[in-house]
Amino acid sequence: MISYLVDAVLLIALAFTSMRVTRMHRELARLRSYQGEFSTIVHETAGAFDTVITAAHDSTANLGRLANVLSAKIDQAHDAIAALDARRGLAPATTTSGADANTH
Image 1 (cartoon, rainbow, N blue to C red):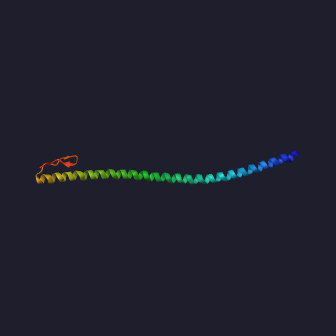
Image 2: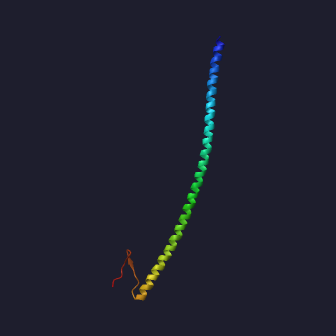
Image 3: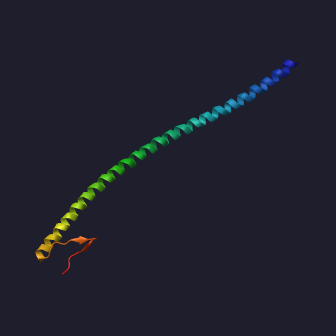
């Protein structure tokens, strides 16, 4: 009689363990699918960061070239102003804080 009681308890414990293992198996399968999605997202994000870094480098290079071109144009403008002043018979213009220091 006691063996039937022990068998019943063991059977209930086995059924409970089987349900828990099945539940854990489903949870692990779900986590694996999430891990795959997460891995894909991480790779896409890394690719996006690489694109941003490349764009930043290109932008920096373009800004450097633009600064050089603008500097050359400013130098040409200064030369043109000096030439115009020389034609009009004025002394070369000197600047102090961005304002002409020439007095007539």
